[in-house]
Image (cartoon, rainbow, N blue to C red; front, side):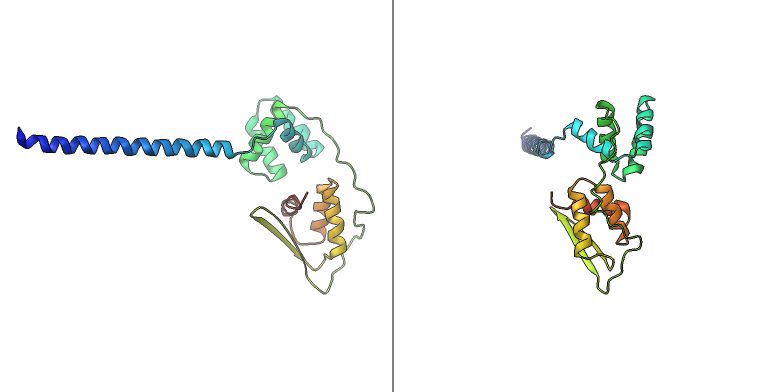
Amino acid sequence: MQSLIVPVLILLAVIACVLLVSRVLSRRATERRSNAASSRTPVDPVELAREAAAKLSEDQHRQLYSLIAQGQAMAAIKLYLGATGEGLRASRDAVGALAAHPQPFRRPEPAPQDLVPDDDEPEHFSYRYRAIASKGDVTREVSSNMLNDEIYGRIRTLAKSGDIEGAALALTKHSDISMKQAREFLELLDD
């Protein structure tokens, strides 16, 4: 009997240590989850719906609401994803906000005509112009020999006046980037 007391005491000590370690680890995991949940900025669903609707053309807007009305949420998310190029989670959130807070289609306000470059074929300069935009730790660069300070200034003015599509179109016309890349670049410009 004496020989069993020491192993039983060791076994009880090991069990107590395991329970203590598991309790500490579960508390840390709970704290991490609560910190992650509290660090996310809450997004106003009505504002999200407005922004999402503004990214769609009239035909895409009609098709998306048709799919929502038919209860085809996955098809609506896929349509939004293809139309905007946003991520899957952002598309899901946007379609959910559009379904919960229906938005009428609004035509984008036309940009002032003096800001829109009217040249058909952009001029090629002898130097390469670099435009850099960053926000936080995200940085984008556009480098082109079809840009200069004046053209880039007009593009920035278009973007700041709210005509992101017109600014993105002008940026793609004066550089070798896609519309998606142009939109990403313009989103990083200071407000």
